[in-house]
Amino acid sequence: MRGAYEDFVLNEYSRSYLERQQLPLCHFSKLKFSSASLSSCAREWSQYLESNGITSQQGIKLVTEAALLGSAIEHGLSPDLIILSDGAKQFAILIHALCWVHMERTIRRLNGVTAQQRQEIEQVQETLWAYYRELKVYQDQPSPQDKERLEARKTRDF
Image (cartoon, rainbow, N blue to C red; front, top):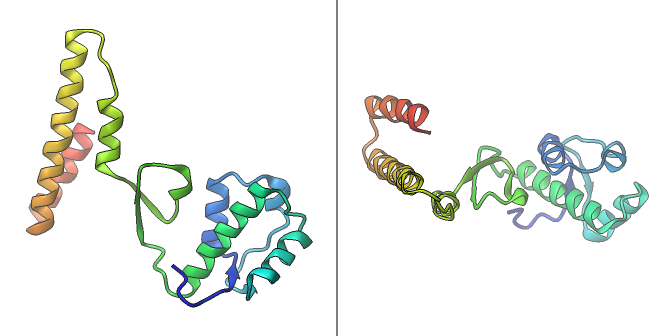
């Protein structure tokens, strides 16, 4: 995502990422966030982390991920980029969207005990996939009316 750039930047997006990942406060309090490059190579970055007492494997991993994200954004990656995933915490960056297939898998794993519960699970799945098909049609032929209708349905059904 950073292209040819090898720098490390801790900016506001890095801060947000570290907050969501729950970086321990003892590490968080040592970091300064700006759009300035903190180092231009991996060796300097390791020295930066060590000088700030960030030596645990998890601390190094999280702060490095944040700095790579910060660098990518500073070099032109849109912070409005949508990251589509299975909901795993490490992908909760920028604008995070849950993949329909992965979301439906969670519903599919439910085992209703009664016939009514099984019917309700099936009904939820049918509603979800019907809405998905409507979104696909909207994607090909968007209109203000359909947008409003789909937003209302999302609010009502989900």
